Length: 339
Image (cartoon, rainbow, N blue to C red; front, side, top):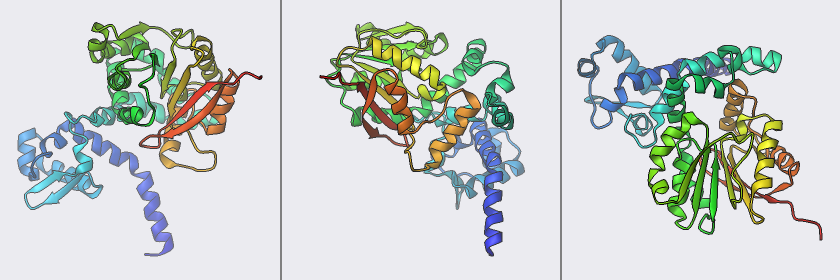
């Protein structure tokens, strides 16, 4: 193949990426990965079990095998290790994430990306007439889909207590903590700590279920609120996991300023984000940066950009820790007072 031919093939791979994503989401919706998790099955037999058209299903399976989520065996098709993640009962919850990314809520917003680039506005608002958080409050079904998808996308955070030691923490406040999975993980690893989850009403319902045991034992409080207005006072750890990337610099400074004023003298702020290296260009983080441009007023920021936000409110970076999937933990503390 010529250089030009390879270039054309690579370009077509990029341009048809949305078709592949839609095919994967359709297979999740149709129950394909659930049926093929344990044993291979032919297209005709699988179509009969699922009530699908055998020829059309066969063509879909063939495509899915070509991109590595299924593999073809003597007995038919079976999920690969990648495809197994898309079973509805898989603990990763990635089937929920596939549904969210394929939803009209997301795809309609991405369709307005050119407008956002031209005007500096938010593509989501252009598509849906309001910001994403107001939209979710007005659409409970989409809010449930969003909460489930965000929980799946946040499974990386289960590794947070492996890189940051919470055992000495007294009170951990999780701002915008969604369904409470991350805070539950922290409290399980730090038995002496008390937790506080601050969230908007749509997400608190799921958090009440996940954190019920901690609430009953007096180790956790669920607080309905808005971190742009205020945060609970007196904690020694404030946790912002995938929060600041949703907001403009001005709003991010507001949230960090609330934390600085509310925190205990020895307090820390943990920022869990795809903190971009100042010199490198990691593709996964940059895809999510574009997604923030589509969905919100925020961005994935570099280390120096975060340091500028922190410095404006009297905080500074103490260290940066690594997590899976290009996630990082920026540990911030108050700027030392001059002697």
